[in-house]
Length: 238
Ligand code: SF4
Image 1 (cartoon, rainbow, N blue to C red):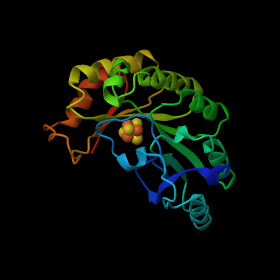
Image 2: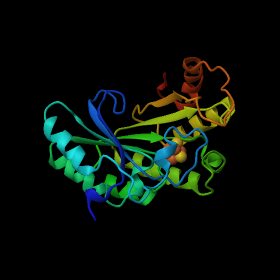
Image 3: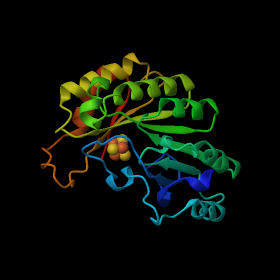
Image 4: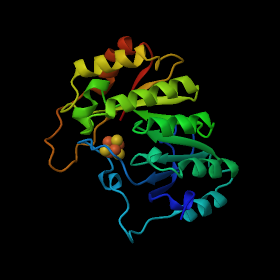
């Protein structure tokens, strides 16, 4: 099978108010991610689909969209890492043709794929996951080339003019405040804070088996301390 029907849909949320700021959106979770962050919020979705594994399927999204004309603003493609899939461009185009907006959640693991989607004008908004300073990506994701790939993706996103939000999961077992200050400075140097794109700090899901308990963290205070290095809005998300 080719085209959007080939996408490994691992989950479908019919209505979300939080995955695309100020929009009502359905969220499609695609399986597969080349990285291995210790705090991964969707470890099941990191794995490619197993043969015979049941999933909601592309048809289910199309049925949902037919019922939600005028009620939903758009569709968010999340993961896993959605840009891993060659059929994503056709899926975005099909959603657009049905009259819905399109958004992506990505960490930038596939810079050429992301640049291609942006150049084709298929994406209305991007939630860009920043793991830490680019030099620390190998430690956080377990992949040597992850930082260089993420940086190239961010550069093409900044160049594209597509609205975006930067989001960082703050796991104090992996990122201390010095790391976060360096990260904020790198993002500013790469032009990511120009234009008012926010950097959003997200609380780490502490309920990960095998990881020690998280120390307490005052996320709003941390956000306030990073604002100067970022030179733009830094927000805390519960
Ligand atoms: S990039 Fe996202 S989906 Fe992939 S391992 Fe990291 S947290 Fe999980």
